[in-house]
Amino acid sequence: MTWVTAVARLRARRESGVLVTVATVRGHAPRGAGAKLVVGSADAWGSIGGGNIEAVAIDRCREMLAAGQQEPELIDFALTDKVTGRHGVQCCGGAVSVLLEPLPVVPAVAVFGVGHVGLELARILARHDLDLHLIDGRSAMLAGERLAVLADAVAQVHLHHAPLLPEEVLEELPHGTHALIMTHDHAEDAALCDAALRTHHLGSVGLIGSAAKWRRFRKRLATEGGHDDDAIDRIKTPIGLADLTGKEPATIAVSVAADLLRTFEAEGAGSSRPG
Image (cartoon, rainbow, N blue to C red; front, top):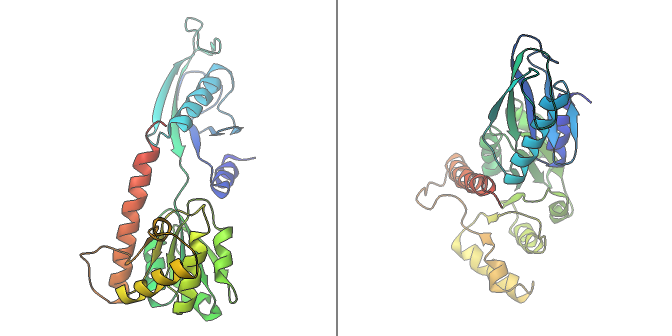
């Protein structure tokens, strides 16, 4: 398996890893500059030359993964018979610098409803390195010509056409996905809120709408859904930044995206600390 394929596999599995690259070589070394190795929590793919260099790099990668470290590191190796490494001696006669770059699990966001606001939000979020799930029961909202504005997306965009029960998509979403509910139908929004509270692997849950809408939903979630106040409080509404009050779709989308990016930063800060 190539290192590119290994990186893609880790991303698809939503597993963190570390990309190891031979950055510089002076004199003789097992591999040239640019050789790569990908290290996951249990497996490794590729090679930077074997021996002590590779074994030490893998050990350090696993330490970084266990600590949730996100900052890259550079390790220098002297390849002489006068230097005994943790895993033995490599006496090729040269010196090697190895760069370790963490490959964190990227955020995942699910936008239920790709109407005017949903599309504007998708355009913003697509500029970021994340997994973006767009769900709508209306095929026209997911048509290729309409979503052509996402053609150059940095994000990996996943489309879900769910005309009957869009709430079933919740179970398919990756662990920790942030769900944003903004469909064209208040009944559908209510069903999604109820289903989201029963889907325990989600991240945050946000609902677009007015205070009056939320009062009706909250009562329904309690009386018909049987959810207690603590559960219902998982749903954030209104979504976005409280001090950005414009009602244009693009303004709402900027507000929601900015608030979501704050959440990503908070999660990243938390994951960088040893558990």
